Length: 241
Ligand code: IPE
Ligand code: IPE
Ligand code: MG
Image (cartoon, rainbow, N blue to C red; front, side, top):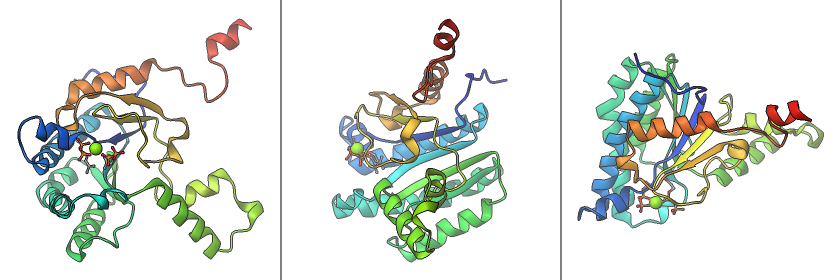
């Protein structure tokens, strides 16, 4: 029986950063870091299932990552394909439902096809909802939401925060309770900029390929100690006034 941190976040989102530096620090090419990153992702998904986390969103490729050298971009595309080929059946067996957030259009047709098949195969699973942010950007998501609302002739007075949420790629998914960023950068890098309005943050200097189950547990334990006030007052302060 696994000892579970409590309370658990319902939705954890992870900026899986530091693959390149992990590789360079070992004298390896950056792509070796990305491959090691996917192996680690497998471990963290299993840990989420064990702990009973309901939603996991992972930042795998941003709308800004197209600006990297061509070989790295192509390498990342291949890695996505390989991961689907290698892991899909196991993930399906574990009860993981795969979803995608971002734009598929710019990806090669074979990759689009694979992603859509993976979504179709797993759509009835409900143990863990895994949102893969690939070719995802938070600003792009909001721009798309506005375009869709205008196309639907939504009237200005009908626009509310709830409605905007329903027009995002993450429609129907609760906002992330906890956002983890590995490798130490203190920035949001265009990730879930709307949904993260009241997320708790956990940043560690550990590079993503080394962020193991114990580190993950540490992040969850830290989250369990947080006092989420949402602009109000904590229960203890309220009780004393
Ligand atoms: C994160 O690792 C993965 C992607 C952005 C695809 P990086 O590739 O950004 O690694 P660093 O930050 O250069 O070390
Ligand atoms: C964020 O990491 C994107 C992903 C992890 C996919 P980056 O490495 O691209 O972010 P910056 O460039 O350091 O802001
Ligand atoms: Mg990086």
